Length: 480
Ligand code: NAD
Image 1 (cartoon, rainbow, N blue to C red):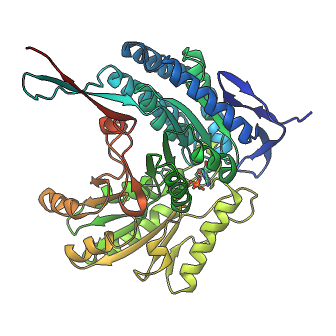
Image 2 (cartoon, helix red, strand yellow; image 1 turned 60 degrees about the vertical axis):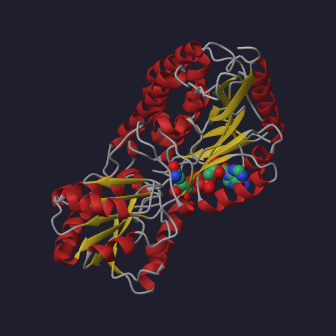
Image 3 (tube, rainbow, N blue to C red; image 1 turned 90 degrees about the vertical axis):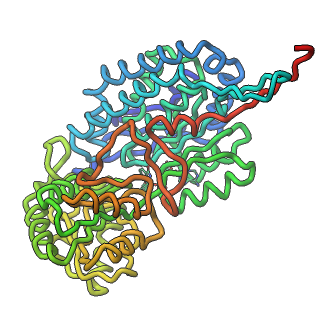
């Protein structure tokens, strides 16, 4: 019998083991300390069948919506009750800071509260066709929603899609990431304790290209919500095309902040700290490029260097400024991208390689300058604590540089001149533009991309409508 902490899949209202278990390590030490049941395609079939039964029974969709409000509020309360325990699990398996892990569960609870507030307000419209007709629309659930989650913020990304899906009356089958899958199980515990109907939520941890692909291609899948990398998203879209299954795609980014000549540099540096070093830069909407007006360029590079070199680095439990990357392979990829950039002429202001003398997956906070705009490091997502800083001479050039990648997730503008800031913001390509604070917004603000960053929106009121389909009923009246 294994001595590791053991976690299970959640299918049809029960915790389910497996023949094989996936090992989970601690990114701060490299030590394997837990394992989770590895779902196979039979588990996937069982989860899809359970979700289908739940949909067909009307247990979620045919009830008075006020009942869904009650369930969602109860889930939020249960998440808060579990937060301390769950955050410690997330901190250890993912490497992130304990306070950030607590924040992730608080955000998860907020998603359920926020969409609880909408669950009984999903109202259709009445369409006038003259006295001979009554015509109205209603928003119907999609049915079974397959949701595939990445490893960087597993609970909050899961809650972001799960809460609106349940609010709208869908049953959900979730595929957790193979890396950092443990803390998500606490969301299932919260759903179980809140008394959700059997089969309404199901959670599987399994190989992406086997179990994930099986779910995506499944005949019972009525919707796919994917958050993850571009290549996987493209693969899923090809598979979804087989049955024309509607999809929401939240993919990667290479987001730029523009620092105009009149920017408040304190604000800029605060946002650099959060924008690229929070979660060790493993954030799809990270500020990975900083475009600075030439008149402030040297000052910003110097201030950013002093910030980066002053960051404490350590295990998440010790609340350092910079935590480890999630896995050894992630560390190797980030380090290799920095090496290639430096070999092709970039100047490394600070960092550029892993932290030596540890078995943990620590990358040094890294600033790169003198990069060419068509280089890999300027164009491609790194997903680590690596910031490219680049000068510009005028607004047109700044906008062209910011918009000059295949991505379009978020962007930012720093400027005390709000007229110019807003004008620049309107020219930027992306689903969300921050002015004077990176990551401004919250569960209330719609989020999503254009181009290779994907399509569809999560968060905010708008996201709820990704989880419904419109039905129109037209009635011909007689003798009125
Ligand atoms: P990934 O694409 O490797 O994996 C994401 C999920 O997809 C995992 O659960 C994986 O098992 C599954 N998967 C893999 N192959 C599959 C297949 N063929 N069919 C179905 N599922 C499959 O991404 P990752 O490395 O876990 O996450 C990092 C990426 O996610 C980054 O590119 C990041 O930008 C992106 N991301 C985007 C957002 C957003 O909201 N836009 C948020 C977080 C992360």
